Image 1 (cartoon, rainbow, N blue to C red):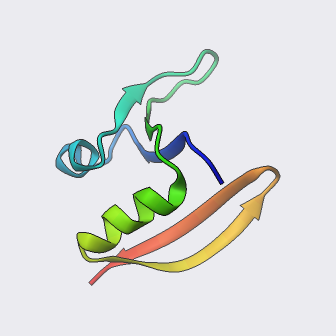
Image 2: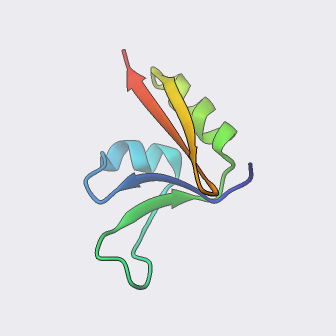
Length: 72
């Protein structure tokens, strides 16, 4: 997969979003904000692993891939 990668919602940890280099945006028609980065998912997952997160599961929803992570 290639970027952009959605990495959080409006309630996400601002420090972690800053570490990932994420930008907060509101897409037309949505009633919520989201954080995204232009990096591919593998780069984002590598950064999160360096912070102590690990992938618990992954699934596909339509053309979207969703990863569930846990921090030890």
